[in-house]
Structure formats: C-alpha cells, structure tokens
Image (cartoon, rainbow, N blue to C red; front, side, top):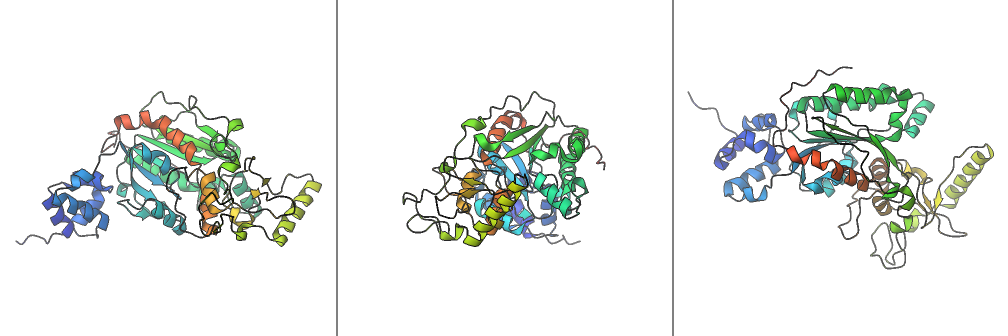
Length: 423
C-alpha cells in the first residue's frame, strides 16, 4: 500500500529533525494547528515555514530565544497592554482583534510576529489557541462605562451583559482560561465596571474567575494621572492559577498630584522638533487643520453656556501646557471637546494631534522610535481613546512578573481538569 502524500510542511519538519510538539511553542501555534498543516488540511503560514527553513539550514536555533513567558493578547486594540509585558522577556503567541483599522496599526508596530491577528474571538475555538503562561485582555468597556451606559440608555439599547455584541465577551475570556489554565491573567476595564448594575456585573466576573479555580486578589483602580498628564481611571484584575501572596496593595503608584503636565507631550511649535506630516508643518507649528473652525468653537461655547445656565457641568475642557487633561475618549474625533488646547486670547483652540495622543497615552517615549500611526486621524483618535495608559501597564507588569516568569513553562497547562462554564 502506497504511503499517503506528505505536505511540504511535513517534509520540512522532518528535515529539521523536530517534532510537532516541540515545534509548536517555537512557532506560537497550537499543536492541533500544526497537525492540520502536517496532514495538508490547511496551508501553513509563511512565517512558520521560514522558521522551519532556518532550522533546516542549521542556524534557526540561534534565532529562537526561549522567552521568559508566553502570552496571548485578546481584544488587543493597538497593543497597549502588550507593550507593558513584552519588554520583560515575554513572547506574544496569539493576538485577537476584530477592528480592521486597529489591526493595521497593531501590525505596523509589531511587524515581526510569527502569527496573524485573529478576528472575532467568539468564532475561535479555545483549543486552537496556543498554550501560554499569561492571558492579557482589555475586554470591551463600552457596555460598562458611564458614557457608554448613558448613550445606550438614551437610545433604548441594552448595556452590560445584556449587550449581546460586547457585554458577554468576558465569557469568551473565561472559556479560554478554562481550556488553557494559564499561569496568570490580567484584565483591564473602566472604573465603572465595579458599580455597573449595582455591583452585580462585577460580582459575576470575579465569581466566575474564582469558580475556575484561580486566586483573584482584590482588584485595583489606578489613575494614570501620576504617569501621564491625563485623568484616566481604570480597573486592573489579576488572577493566578496557584494561590500566592500577590497583592496590588503594595504597588507603588506615583501621586496624581505630582504627575507630568501637558507641556511634556505637546508639540513645542518653536522649530526644535522635527516636522511630522500631517501633524506639524515644516516650521514645526501644528497643522491648521487641528484648529477648531469658528462655527464649531461658537457651537461648543454656546452648548457649555446653555448647560451652565441649567446647573449642569457639561462643556468643553480648555487646557494649557501646565494643566492636566480630562480622559481621552474614543469619541475625540467628533469635536475634540474634552481636551482643547488653548492657543491664547482671540485664537480658536485646537485638538490634540494623533502624535500628541500617542504621547498622552504613553505609547511614545523619549529616545525611542515613534509609535507608527498608519491610519486616518479619525481612526487614530478612536484607537488611542480606546487604549490603555501604557506606563500604568508597565508598572503592573513589573509588579506581577515574580509570579509569572518564575514558573513559566513551554506547556503551562495545569493537570486539573477545567471546570465547566456556567451562564
């Protein structure tokens, strides 16, 4: 009886002298995926074939450095949470993000990944996700945020877990944790998650994570104001497969009272900064397109006056170099009203440029290559407004690391059987 024809992947793997099980963690794909390639049931990614070819040539092993830990990046956005953990020796082995424009920005800033960005997480089988030590997830916050809930109420739409498109995505995080039993996880969301639906939403989330057998210390709300010139409060939820003495209580967070001011992220506009189209002109000044038109500026002033007269606090946020901004939101592209830069007496204020937003969120650091912004201003504003303050995540990552890297393994699956999902 003739042997079944072998796939190119199978032949290369045999020439490299490496098993499917040993190859999977090097490539960042699950064993199940590699066996499909082996049998010719699916086409292997080019990056995976390149790894094999390097191994065949005998110099691939030098390129493959065993990471301190392996992690997955769910609801990845533009990679803000990843930027806190990867520099500590982590290797991202799986990314999920459904928005096409966010995927474009993510790919531009992480061009060397050996895996493609997966789309809708609800359509992905947990067993097809590679083994990992750490799960990172900034699951969608709109169903729980104050602004998101207010908007949905006004439109008569469901919010929280009743929002079937976004509110239930937490349970996809739970099913992946149940399947893979990672060493640890970090979840990020808006501060209002704690109070949503009179605390019932938060109780369900923490309860489910603990039902999965994880040690979940008290979460912590951190204001990024001590790290960046922006008032931005987010809740961080950490969990560990084994009970440990980790606590957020001893995480040293800079006082918001002594944080940086906006002048640290604004374009100087004096010619000392290299021009960057389309954000700044050849002479270093901010492009005029970011200055509010007379019509929009008049509308925002009238709107604020109307609400002041009614005793409400709604209105624009006008700030200068020595101030701290309000929270940058995903709706900033609409009118920029929450953060308007004062340009002096008699001049209309302006929006932040996307480059300034990158700095405001901590994506850009002095002395390092600028974060790539390959999308339109509208998409960039949405992406930064939906993201995390990177310095906060960096601090949390350093704080968690002793409980992650110490026992990280190539196959961190826990021998305990996953508990059944409920709800």
